[in-house]
Length: 99
Image (tube, rainbow, N blue to C red; front, top):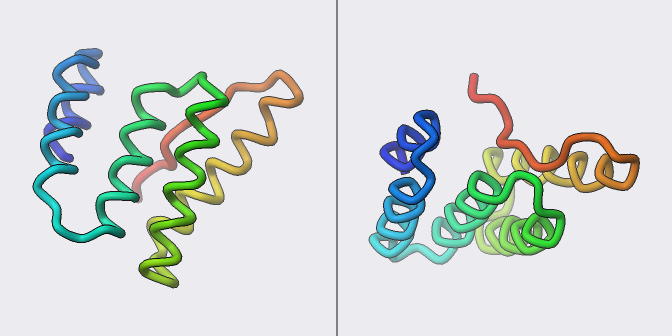
Protein backbone atom coordinates (compact mmCIF):
# COMPACT_ATOMS: atom_id res chain seq x y z
CA UNK A 1 0.00 0.00 0.00
CA UNK A 2 2.87 2.36 0.76
CA UNK A 3 4.39 1.86 -2.67
CA UNK A 4 1.00 2.52 -4.28
CA UNK A 5 0.70 5.79 -2.35
CA UNK A 6 4.24 6.68 -3.40
CA UNK A 7 3.35 6.21 -7.08
CA UNK A 8 0.20 8.30 -6.66
CA UNK A 9 2.18 11.19 -5.22
CA UNK A 10 4.28 11.06 -8.37
CA UNK A 11 1.22 10.95 -10.66
CA UNK A 12 1.92 7.40 -11.78
CA UNK A 13 -1.58 5.99 -11.45
CA UNK A 14 -1.06 2.82 -13.50
CA UNK A 15 1.85 1.72 -11.30
CA UNK A 16 -0.14 2.72 -8.22
CA UNK A 17 -3.09 0.60 -9.29
CA UNK A 18 -0.86 -2.44 -9.81
CA UNK A 19 0.58 -2.00 -6.32
CA UNK A 20 -2.86 -1.54 -4.76
CA UNK A 21 -4.10 -4.73 -6.41
CA UNK A 22 -1.00 -6.65 -5.28
CA UNK A 23 -1.31 -5.42 -1.69
CA UNK A 24 -5.00 -6.29 -1.56
CA UNK A 25 -4.24 -9.76 -2.91
CA UNK A 26 -1.57 -10.41 -0.28
CA UNK A 27 -3.95 -9.91 2.62
CA UNK A 28 -5.94 -12.82 4.02
CA UNK A 29 -8.02 -10.58 6.27
CA UNK A 30 -11.43 -9.66 4.78
CA UNK A 31 -11.60 -6.38 6.74
CA UNK A 32 -8.19 -5.33 5.44
CA UNK A 33 -9.17 -6.29 1.89
CA UNK A 34 -12.35 -4.19 2.09
CA UNK A 35 -10.53 -1.20 3.62
CA UNK A 36 -7.65 -1.34 1.12
CA UNK A 37 -10.00 -1.75 -1.82
CA UNK A 38 -11.95 1.30 -0.66
CA UNK A 39 -8.72 3.28 -0.40
CA UNK A 40 -7.71 2.20 -3.90
CA UNK A 41 -11.06 3.27 -5.31
CA UNK A 42 -10.92 6.65 -3.57
CA UNK A 43 -7.35 7.34 -4.60
CA UNK A 44 -7.73 6.28 -8.23
CA UNK A 45 -11.18 7.83 -8.79
CA UNK A 46 -11.22 11.01 -6.68
CA UNK A 47 -13.91 12.70 -8.79
CA UNK A 48 -16.25 9.76 -9.39
CA UNK A 49 -19.34 9.78 -7.20
CA UNK A 50 -20.42 6.30 -8.29
CA UNK A 51 -17.04 4.86 -7.30
CA UNK A 52 -17.29 6.77 -4.02
CA UNK A 53 -20.56 5.01 -3.24
CA UNK A 54 -18.88 1.65 -3.88
CA UNK A 55 -16.00 2.65 -1.59
CA UNK A 56 -18.52 3.66 1.08
CA UNK A 57 -20.03 0.18 1.02
CA UNK A 58 -16.57 -1.37 1.36
CA UNK A 59 -15.74 0.82 4.34
CA UNK A 60 -19.03 -0.13 5.98
CA UNK A 61 -18.16 -3.78 5.37
CA UNK A 62 -14.72 -3.29 6.94
CA UNK A 63 -16.39 -1.78 10.00
CA UNK A 64 -18.87 -4.65 10.25
CA UNK A 65 -15.93 -7.05 10.23
CA UNK A 66 -13.79 -4.95 12.59
CA UNK A 67 -16.05 -2.70 14.69
CA UNK A 68 -14.44 0.44 16.04
CA UNK A 69 -11.59 0.51 13.50
CA UNK A 70 -10.64 4.17 13.75
CA UNK A 71 -8.90 4.40 10.36
CA UNK A 72 -11.98 3.00 8.59
CA UNK A 73 -14.27 5.25 10.62
CA UNK A 74 -12.25 8.35 9.67
CA UNK A 75 -12.17 7.38 6.00
CA UNK A 76 -15.91 6.70 6.01
CA UNK A 77 -16.66 10.04 7.67
CA UNK A 78 -14.48 11.93 5.16
CA UNK A 79 -16.01 10.02 2.27
CA UNK A 80 -19.56 10.72 3.42
CA UNK A 81 -18.75 14.44 3.68
CA UNK A 82 -17.27 14.35 0.19
CA UNK A 83 -20.26 12.51 -1.23
CA UNK A 84 -22.62 15.01 0.39
CA UNK A 85 -20.59 17.94 -0.93
CA UNK A 86 -20.89 16.64 -4.52
CA UNK A 87 -24.54 17.52 -4.38
CA UNK A 88 -23.53 21.15 -3.93
CA UNK A 89 -20.91 21.11 -6.68
CA UNK A 90 -17.89 21.17 -4.37
CA UNK A 91 -14.83 18.92 -4.79
CA UNK A 92 -15.43 15.24 -4.25
CA UNK A 93 -13.51 12.30 -2.88
CA UNK A 94 -10.23 12.86 -1.14
CA UNK A 95 -8.15 10.67 1.16
CA UNK A 96 -8.20 12.00 4.73
CA UNK A 97 -4.97 13.70 5.74
CA UNK A 98 -2.53 11.53 7.66
CA UNK A 99 -1.33 12.78 11.02
